[in-house]
Length: 117
Image 1 (tube, helix red, strand yellow):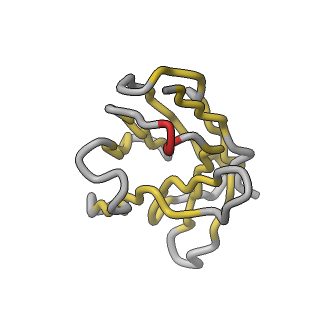
Image 2 (spheres, one colour):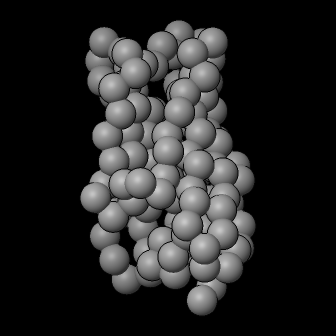
C-alpha cells in the first residue's frame, strides 16, 4: 500500500509564493510519475502539474510560467513551487503518485492553499 502525504499549504496574499511538498512511501513503491491536482469549492478536480521520473514535465496552461514542479531522484518526493499566486489558485491541492509498472495511482489527503486579494 502506498501512502502519499502533502505538506506546505497555507494562506498568502496575491502575488506571493508557496512551496508544496509530497512524499510517497510504500515497501515496494517505485514511482513512474508524480503530480499535483487541485479542487476549488464547487468545481471539479483539475490537473496542475506532472513530472515523470525520466524528468519530463507538463503543466496546466493556467499555471505555466508561475509554478514549477521538481522531484527528488533519491526518493519518491516532489515539490511544487508556486509563485505569483492569484486568488483563483485557491483550492485544495492533491498529490498523485503513479506506480511504475502497474501505473496504479495513489492520492494524498490534500492541502489547502488560500490566496487573498
